[in-house]
Length: 254
Image (cartoon, rainbow, N blue to C red; front, side, top):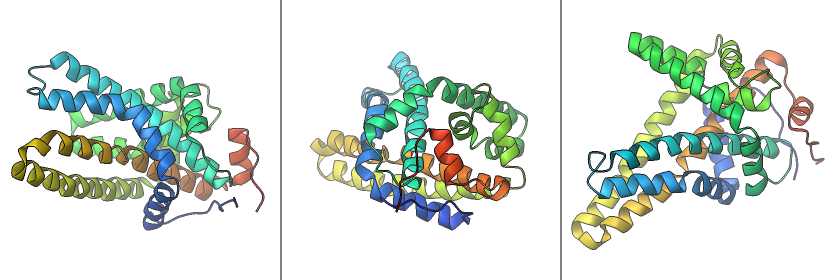
């Protein structure tokens, strides 16, 4: 498999490349999503069908915690898949999950610190919260891929990398959010109509919607992993040789 050249990308190119990666490695990404988000998705469906969080508050909190942990695992695994694809290797689910697990401590530190800072900024005003979220959007990528002293150092590294490019980060967040809303609304309407016309299909329709929505997690991770590489190429002349050194994997030859 030939390597793909690392180069600066416009916003639209990042989104196109993310869709292309998702199509090309759909089986790997879906497997990762099932393993990492299958249980929290199932718990969320159980809570939803069983009367809501008021009836199952403990399970609801557990599902939210597992969703966060699963998101970090999906992000770490997706970073590996994207990086392997750039280096010309055929990504595998097992290798990606092993990589994500080995980096879980750093991912958690970066993700938790980013989340806390974003929430605190949102308590002040909405605009500062958005700015902080945009500035910390590649914190996990930096923590996982760079030899930083600790995972939480990914926060400062992300803020530095996104300096001058926070509008681009906002654009990615905005477009991805709109796409996700349209996607979920579209399939939600289909599931709702099917359940209304044929009530026995309510549970299967919700399960189907949950399974399809699992692919949203790796898509988001792909978008911001590609954005991370875009920033490093623009600011630091990052190339495949440096990427292979970070991963400890040689680039495949064309």
